[in-house]
Image (tube, rainbow, N blue to C red):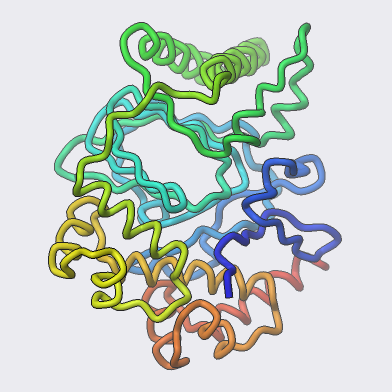
Length: 342
């Protein structure tokens, strides 16, 4: 069963609406009726982390800027996660491989990523090197409400049509974006209404810049992946397309024509995690989504649908990654849904 393209993205009348990743481009989150923030489902932090769930929030910031920060990656973002806000990510420096869905990007300083937020993504960094980035999360309906412009331009089209894309900036282009981000930060530090209006106008200017750069469908050709990185890309893609199958190293070795020991070594080196941690994370992410979407689904059924043949193995891995048993997680989802309906 192929369930990997499903993500919960909004609610109508207390019930979850399910939209596939492939159709998300034509849909906008209704921020005026229901705003969201990223939550950890009240589950204890686990060693491996997991997907970040989506729940309503009374007062999220519609545009959230974190400027040029170098704090360690929080464990909730160190593994695959998603959020309903669009995201602009600018890489100032460090060593980072960025996974978006089944695509692997080896970043260079000056790279700018736009993301729809709903595609599972995570950074894999070298902790021995200072990791500096700027991130902006924004609610697309709020930003749409700041328009129209004097001459109509669909500045959100790159996030809706391309969904996830990398712009490779250097020289004057890189300096221009860094200057824009600096001005945004300066305006954001001042809480005066005039400065907030300036902040919004400067943010629109950044979106216009991105739109112009994405106009021809986009970035300059990237530096080709190395053989090692290309092999890891192939592993990630294979797992994304077959994570519900019975996968083992010998199976990957046969399908991808790579020695299993070499595979394990390069995957750990490039992504910072093991092949099976990546596989189990993908399965457990999908299981959490199924429990959230299908309240009456049994633990055995969900475990089987995401690739576990034995419910005891599923329960053990689920608890290891999420911090609670599948049944406890399912009960917590029911409780949250009941509270939201009330």
